Image (cartoon, rainbow, N blue to C red):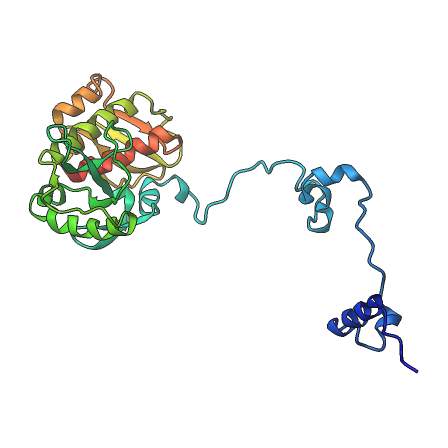
Length: 290
């Protein structure tokens, strides 16, 4: 008498049990729970973020995710967030290409490759300023310290800096080549930086917000012709530093910046506002350039 072959459904069940380590346990059938599809209490919650519908599980206060947090951030040290020198030092660090030093980016100028007006097939290594009209095509960038000696010294060092850029350019575009034969140095880079930054300083000066002399964390813009130091740290509690404008940007430029300097020789400002902070940063750079 021949035995009947087992049904396919029975074989599938045996294979499933053997392949599942939990099902192989003798107690699996006792403690196993039937799987049920998830049905939300309110189907409308499916279209809302889970942080809004279930925030009570993670939040101590029920209103934490319901309304935006309104308040002022606390700095590590009182007044540090209003100190322009701390802001400059806290800017992202970059490598100064000629000296290979790591410096804050607010103490340097960014350089890139732009098209030569006289020769469209040749590129020029030129300063790139965010507030100027000079734009660079996609490619390698480099940083150079904002100082007179560093910019003028690039006349003899730009080829070595170009070698560093060529290494980065191979990663960005393997088929491109940067050599002194197809790239040149902008000979008027120093004059271009001075003129463009001075134009931006004049534009920002018209937008800065003045403060009362009794306000805390002030910066004093001074047209005192007897001053001998470009930037002085004053012993007064409410004034952090004194910027002597004629020593930072030159006597003629200082007069052009504030024609009424004889009747109003000093201006008090803070770092609040984008125009005020950028104005002080550019003054700092121009002080190193002159």
